[in-house]
Image (cartoon, rainbow, N blue to C red; front, side, top):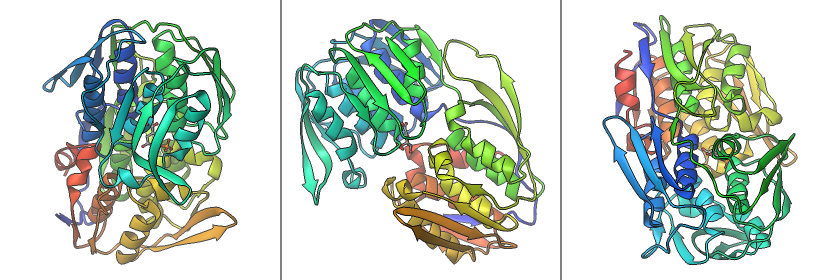
Length: 438
Ligand code: S3P
């Protein structure tokens, strides 16, 4: 696909609404399935990953109706132990969040399930979830290669025992899988995070009246308590999708973009903090929640700015993990040097995002390198005056694709990006939304 540089104006101008938050949507469907009765999930994002979760939950015997026109999912939940053994394997395609959360959910079921994955997800590590779930009593067989475990996985639930588990890697997916398993365990499951990660599972569990306490970086859930549906909840727009437009507006001259009703969950605000440190001057208007939900929401206004280099510390990484590719684009066009510390987790996303962004941005004239410091990997970017058009690749990864499209628009000339259909994983309407601004 071809993108013409917009660096010589006109910029991105207008007001946009973007789809609901992908992370929140997975959790909303899963918890709604476990609470008796009907729950309406408003602003449900109709992307491949969230549809994979809805399909998986349907395979477990839960009725879900989707109204595509109004972006609404209605889930007919059947209590904590109301899931059925699926007919055949469940394939979650490329959705890593679906896969890991389902492992937690299935660990509590008294039947066996085979979980299958698409090509790229079959290469993503699962031992980080499997290990603690085995400690709780689940029986899990996977594909083992060199000390790591990968999909497909067969999981047979059990009478789970509560554990106290200190996560070796800061991962919201692993934490959430353990909290879901904790719903079925006898006693109190304690999960201790090395760094705080997104807390949508905790918020959603509280909304559904689970017995859950948060004490600093420790989350404690007591098993056996039935969930109570809030009946309806609204999913604010995904800040990870909004980030492409924030940076786009910042780096393309003559831009001004208003992004409506975005999730402002503090555990996801790293991108806003970092961009503002770079001089982005993002303006946020907080909104009162419409409908029921447990997530702060607001409008974000972004406009063209001269950005400066920034240092992102390792402790900030979980709050902006998915925004690192687009922040790399911003750093390339900022004055001075940027350092992103402790970014190794990027290597195990949909693709190795350190490699994909390094290869692509270097082709466009960026000064970017990766430096090892002990076990830690840091990215160092020296800002350049402008990026030049090039032939680049999505590497089959949605966030690399969208980041490179924004980079292409900020560059001079015509940039070609291959295989952008992977964008459907999180944001099928991305190009349409972008076109509405150009
Ligand atoms: C997610 C957690 C993060 C993130 C992913 C979504 C979630 O992954 O990168 O896109 O919804 O819990 P990790 O838990 O692997 O960091």
